[in-house]
Length: 372
Ligand code: UD1
Image (cartoon, rainbow, N blue to C red):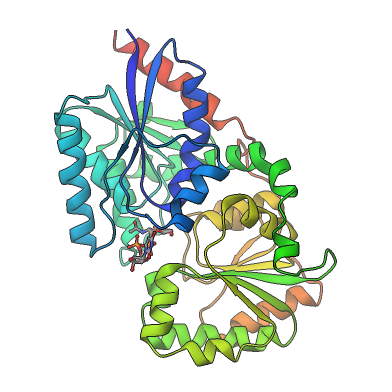
């Protein structure tokens, strides 16, 4: 009997993690029936649909349309609607959730309470910072998962320390890198450089910002914009603005400060392939994203992470990532060092090789075999 698997996606960073697994499971349709469930946490064309197209993903089998809200509202809506979906004749044998967004914990919780097995892709990552909503989502999802797929050894160590039984933990590597490997050639052909009028040789810094800790309050956002102003005097800046950030810039009255940054190109959120091309060709990246710390390590592009901590320390110990103290002077200082040629070199961590989805499917085969 084929096993039914739900793959949960909700927010932008989920799509590139599930696309490779969806493909790998589809090739095994003798053993698995795979349904893609989109909670609708991200719903804008540019935050969602564009990614489905770029990654060659089909329309979701179910779309829960939960939309925005407070954490409580959004998480509650996902729980309510996903439970309803399962109970209306759509019970799977396994639910796979990815990453650390509200859709991750909400769907894991629904499945667990209905006695359905849960697997967590990208398990074991810890920032040890409970003020970060994603950290709470990570810890709780791992606590109730039956299979924990880790991207790197530090994930295994964190989980073992928390008392997770070793047999539940599987080091499979970084599944996001599967998407990069699969789509690299397509991304090379992206026209985004000419669309943004960037010549092949022109150096630029690529900026992304969306963490509540950076963009929800005026002091933090003002500090960052003043750093960008000084950096913009030395190098062109490309800044695709996240909806949370653009709403806050307007709400906090910082639009004119943004407009004063020299050499700045602002865009709407950018699709997967175009953004990959922009990462590959950047002189360096300034970001508070989780995934971009990893992608830049894979591409060997220096990344300055605008956060006090990271749940992805391997990008620092092995990769090209550095944490930058959150002051305007430090951000400018680290950026200038790169422009002067003082560039952190890195290597690509083990199992970040494009074969993670294959390893996951092998573990799933064993998992179901052991339960027969
Ligand atoms: C969420 C994730 C975060 C992830 C990020 C990537 C949680 C707790 N956070 O944060 O881990 O790194 O996505 O983008 O799950 N909005 C739109 N259009 C959309 C989606 C959101 O305009 O398609 C607006 C919302 O109305 C809201 C803001 O953007 O005002 C934030 O969206 P939300 O999903 O709450 O959190 P993110 O900051 O995107």
